[in-house]
Length: 272
Image (cartoon, rainbow, N blue to C red; front, side):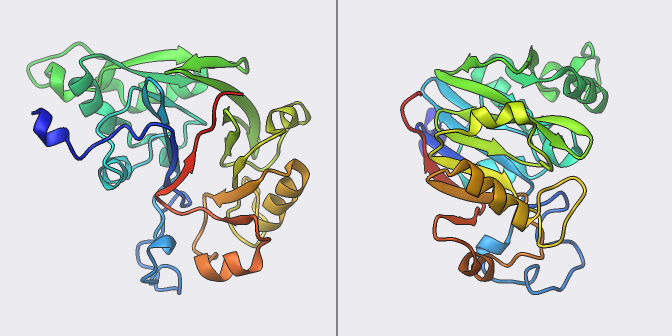
């Protein structure tokens, strides 16, 4: 069994954008636009998620529907934990794909989330919390434990995690700062008290859905305004729709700002 895992790695010290697309993914089913038919792999965007290779294991932020394919693409064998930003389908519905992680690690995968997200998980994946029956043996359901996230920092697998309150339209959600990287997807407003957690960043990964305004996401102009205020060394836009072609959009952006793409790897610095 160990030989089968030789190609895999927990990717220590890496922060990987597993998916960078909007809620329907890119290409969109049935769409023949320039981006959806592009041969450029950087225009092919799975639903949004990131993977962090921590000193004591690996964890995800969100579990999108393509999670299995994303983990296979990056040769990641398992995850020890998941942080959740919110409970919308495009960030949640790949959760069953962590089932193999609990089986291989022989322990539960911990889900770090707010109460409203736990409630959504228990509704959507109720079979994971039921007693096994002859139709539902122990290997057919994920092994999951919940850990409540507040706005206080906490330690996970050797890293310090700082939750960041964000607004997704009228829905309060979470971003996360890990060392000098901040991940803020699905955001349309940053509350005043949250800006302090975006100071001194090496990398900012921030929502920028499209050119036109949107009620629950930053558009490109708003994303650039955040970058200008925060002044990270580099910034990457995520949760990208099919209205933004990778190369054309990057050519219009400041030198230190670009669209993220599936499989982008950034280095994690020492703890700060």
